[in-house]
Image 1 (spheres, rainbow, N blue to C red):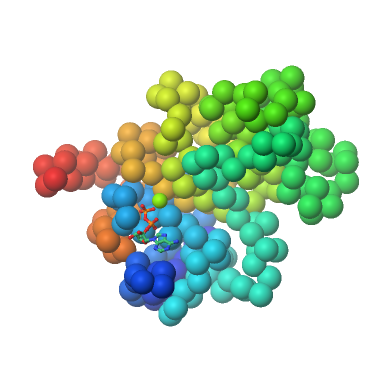
Image 2 (image 1 turned 30 degrees about the vertical axis):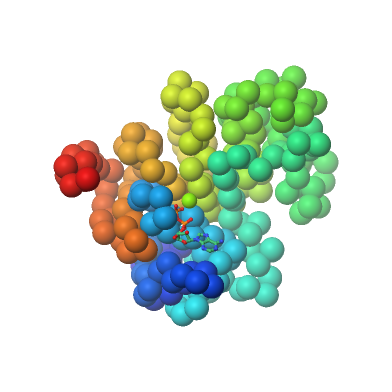
Length: 237
Ligand code: ADP
Ligand code: MG
């Protein structure tokens, strides 16, 4: 498919004692938000880790814009794949400014560019500039999560992976964060692959979804198919 950003083709993968995926084939469309739904242990996190090369397939391949991941330069490849996790992964001893600009500094961007991107992201996430000199623990959970997203987006990666980033954020804060996500997606569209076990979250945000069950895709569809699927799923459990 021409508009595919990320694809897995015939992938078998897992851990020493456990095969999580056997012959998994799936494609993620460019500039769409795809939610990965599924119970705990169904393989959602492993799927994201396959995409960013933290887990390597035993068989099959992972393709990024049509090219197989090059594991010999995986650190470089990851610059085009943002990754946001639940506990934000912010560095506690670095200020918010340093946390957000980290990847830009590593990539050697000149100072004016760093500042320009920093300001742009702070604006989009509606973070006050007073936060720049603070440390992560001095911000609320929701603010920290927004900082985590700003950091992941610093180099404007074409692909963003999110692994249940809002599991510990309360409902009202979540609503606000979803608005920021929509703002980001409107101003700089990218391919988002978003793991959640929260169907409300998926119904609110995704364009498409995948339902994983024990390492297999049991359903793949568009957002408007979610409500009826949800009713059926609840009836089954
Ligand atoms: P999910 O994110 O949907 O909860 P995971 O991808 O984390 O599922 O896990 C899929 C399966 O792989 C589970 O059975 C889990 O116990 C196992 N698993 C996950 N991570 C590891 C690991 N680092 N080592 C061994 N087994 C793992
Ligand atoms: Mg997980």
